[in-house]
Length: 279
Image (cartoon, rainbow, N blue to C red; front, side):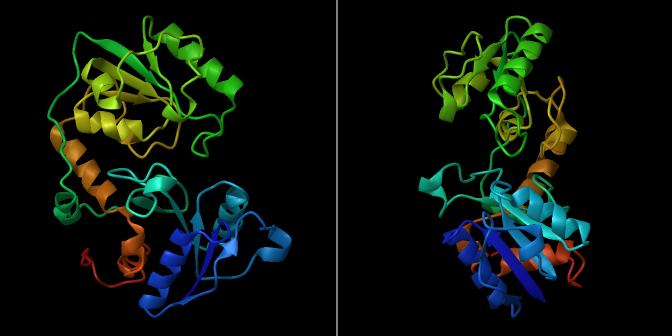
C-alpha cells in the first residue's frame, strides 16, 4: 500500500508518521509541502493520504482526494492530554481522523483510555453558577470564522443567554467581544463556577464533559456533538465517548511504531483483526 503525506516543510511529526508507515512494511513517498500543493500539478493516485492540518492548501487536498474516493487521514491536535502549542508537540496527543476533523474511531476498547489515567467526574460545576461562553481563535480551521463573524456569534449568544461571562481564548486574550470576562485564572476554575458552557466546536467541550459540566456546541464539527446540550449526559455515555477519543489520538513516538497506522487500516477495513495492541 502506498501512502502520501502532506505537511509543512520539515515538520517532524510528519516524518514520524512516515517512519511508522515504513515500519509496517508499506510505501510512503517523502513528505510533500501542503503549502505548495496545486490540484493540477500535485495530485497523485495514492492508496491513502495523511494530511497534517487544514491550513495552507489542506482543504484543497482533502477535497481532491476524497472526491477520488481516496481516504484522507487528517492529523491535528488531539482531545485528551493533547498537544496545544509547539512546546508540547513531541509529547502531546494528536488526533488521527478519517476524511475530516474530529471523526472519532468506532473503537471503544477501554485499554488505552485506562492507560491514559483520564478522570471523568460524575457531576461538577455549580448548578447556581454562571453561563460561560468559550470563544475560539479567529480563523481556526475548525470553524473558519473571521473576527467580525465571531463578534456576531458572541452577540447572538449574549442575547440568548443574558448575563453570561466570556472566557477569551488564551492565545487571543484581548478579544473579549464587549462581554464581561470570567475572572477565573484557569479553565478548571472557570468550569467549577459554571452551570453551563456555550462554545462553537471547541475541544473545550471535552474538558467540560470530563468536569461534569453540560456544554452546548453551536458550530458543526465538534467531536463531542452527540453529547451537546443543556443537560449533562450520563457518566456512562461520556465514558464511552472518551474511550473513543483515547483510541483516536497518538503521540509522535507512537506514530513511529506503526501502531496508529494499523489502527487506521483496521478502521478502513484493510485489516482482518478487530482489535490491535495499543502498546
